[in-house]
Length: 344
Image 1 (spheres, rainbow, N blue to C red):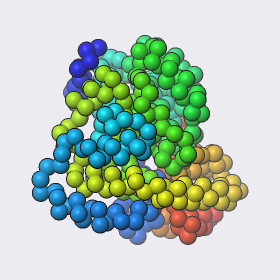
Image 2 (cartoon, rainbow, N blue to C red):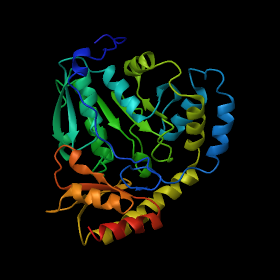
Image 3 (cartoon, one colour):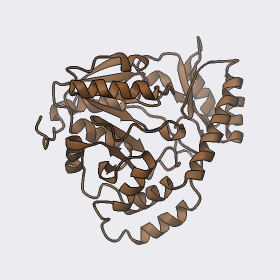
């Protein structure tokens, strides 16, 4: 592949690919456990946003020096390796667009985030599905890309850091790019794999910092891959408010620590309560995957919503047919969820 080459989206494929269902509710009367978003935001964000809004009458600096510098501290890489994107999904799309050609094959985990499959198909390429807990055992040879979600959504499994780095070496030896989606890694203590040769990391800032509508994230990679991403990204890829709030939030280390502690404590409490009615999948992420057994997952979703709580129908994930997914929120909110699920 030519280092400057960027593969266009396959226009014929667009007509054959559908939208992917996601969680989230914009109903103010619904307590939303269907999207895995921190219900709290860092103190001071509002003031940062207001100041940035006043500067939005001009274009932001397209090189985003402050944002890159803070992102490099956040994941321990160099600022030059950071490519700003409007959310983690934009980093995923940018990686696939600059790595995968029509008729290539891509190893995609399941059950996992449905946008991987969709983005691969939009390139006219072929997703080859692998169980998410076996993806590090696959041979990357003859594949354009391997995708890993760490921790995996919707199961919450966190990959062993050493095993992931060994697999990154296998991909590098095979000449295959490894894309690691770390959208929820900030909720854990595990270090990012960012900066490894042959690896592209996709990071989202909006989940950990409770601002999904802001659309802020970045990719991290090195060498020719970094050059392709930087050349292909859109000009002014982040709005001034998103860049300013993202930069500020990544500095909020106390907020991050408090969030991790709260999620871990609430996760343990919720597991203990839910284990009496559901098979709870162990999770290192701010959500729980529940097997409802012989009950109808869709009926549970509808019943919960009637009682003011939104939960995620996880049967829309490939390979799952008896599951729902619930986020970990604040203690009093989690109590409401537990009360509702106790009756379904």
